[in-house]
Structure formats: C-alpha cells, structure tokens
Image 1 (cartoon, rainbow, N blue to C red):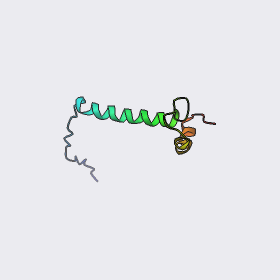
Image 2 (cartoon, rainbow, N blue to C red; image 1 turned 120 degrees about the horizontal axis):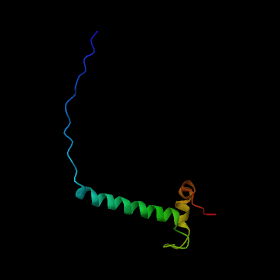
Image 3 (cartoon, rainbow, N blue to C red; image 1 turned 135 degrees about the horizontal axis):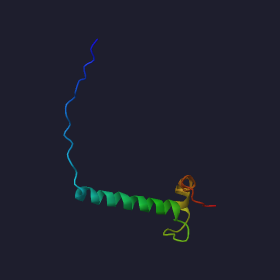
Image 4 (tube, helix red, strand yellow; image 1 turned 30 degrees about the vertical axis):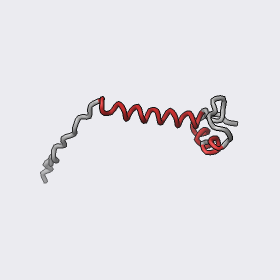
Length: 70
C-alpha cells in the first residue's frame, strides 16, 4: 500500500500592518485595565462609586485573582 501525501490548497494569508492593529490593541488594553481596576481597587481607597454594589458584583473575581477584600 502506498501512502502518498496529498497537498491541500495553498492559503494566502494577508499581512496586517501594525498601524491597523495598534488602535485595537490600545482599546483592549484600556478595557482590561478598567476591568482590573474595578475588580481590584474599587470600594477601597480609590473608590469611584458609592455603596457596595460593585464589590458584591466582583467579589468572587477578587478572590480568584488573589485580592484581599475581608
């Protein structure tokens, strides 16, 4: 029995310039920083919102990431 390798069609993957990727990278980095702030620092010394609603919404995430909150 002969096992001939079958070559599939060649894919033409377009190159993405860095200038097109930079705004998206900045946006998602900013979004991640805001998420980390609300999980890690909100309801502490740098609290932006009054009350404990944000703390209750992100309570389990704080423990998962190792932030002390008790």
